[in-house]
Image (cartoon, rainbow, N blue to C red):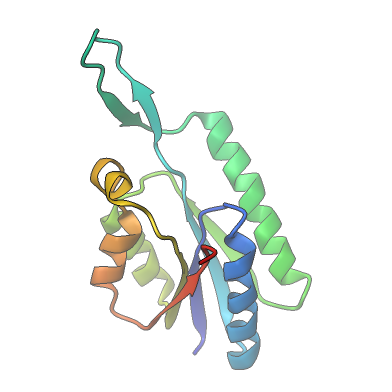
Length: 147
């Protein structure tokens, strides 16, 4: 197992995922690529009573802040001797994520598993769920929510 891709969302739960990434990378002497998708930002369109919420690309300062946080995660692996790199996507489609995973040549994908409610799934959806359904290599799901 030469290449591990870790899908990280930069939440406080990211370190729970990194703990497992570290274990797997150490056990298999693997190189790790941290992959982060900058989430689109919700914007409420003021149209009176029925004000829809639309998603638009994140502002440059949000992209830069996420990149800095991603670098911190990469550094936390590197300081323990893990060969790590980081990639950030500003287009958060399942196709973009799958293309990136394929271009890396992942032998294993590690990602956190969140328990979102029906309303969240209905309005926000989940690129992670779409990616999971289309995965062609093994996936390690790390439960990150407290039960």
